[in-house]
Structures are given as C-alpha cells and as structure tokens.
Amino acid sequence: MTNITERLAESVPSWGAKVAFGEKTTLNGQELIPVALVAFGFGAGQGSGDSPEGGSVPAGHGEGSGGGGGGYSVPIGAYVGGPNGLRFQPNPITLLVVATPFVSALGWAVSRIINAAR
Image 1 (cartoon, rainbow, N blue to C red):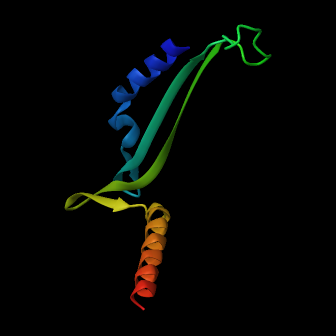
Image 2: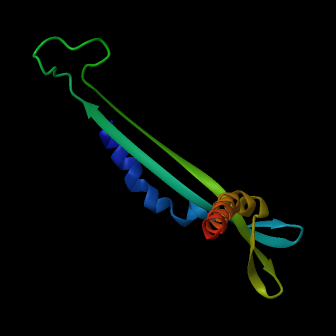
C-alpha cells in the first residue's frame, strides 16, 4: 500500500501546469485558458498488533495498513485573449467566497478596537 501511495505522490509534480491551467478553449471567438488553484494530499500508515501486556489483541485492533489521498480544485479565473493580448479575468464567485471570511475577520477586529477605545 505504501508503495502505491509513494508512486502517486511522486507523479503529482509531473502533472503541474496541466492541472492548474486547463486546455485552451475558444468561446464566442475568444480564446480562454481556465486557471484553478489545485491541492493534493496523500498518506499511508501501518499498524502493529502488539499488546503492551503480551496478551491477545482485541478484534479490530490487529496489524494492518492503509492509505488514501484527496485533493481539491478551485476555479479562480481565466486568461482571455483579446486585441491587446492575454488578460486575466478572475472568477467573481470565487473572489466572493474567499473574501467573505477576511471581511468578517476585519469587521470583528475593527469592532474590538472600537470597543477597546471607549
């Protein structure tokens, strides 16, 4: 199991720009290159069936191994071709989702500063 996980983790850097930047597409006569923020994670583990007292190991707590992985992709915008060359256009929904926690934290901090100044 660990061998498979190691091979997957080693292959991620070779994906590189192919994952973060999509294939060039033409839409309504304009060339688009989609851009995404991509993250991956892999892990593996191996358990031991030894009991501290030398007795038997309870069911479900014996030797074993396992592994897994996951990832996510957030579309952040696209490069759009125009008369002046490529121009990045952000995804407004993603910007709103990302900005909301920051704006909330800023509002909370400002309210704490105002309350402390009173």
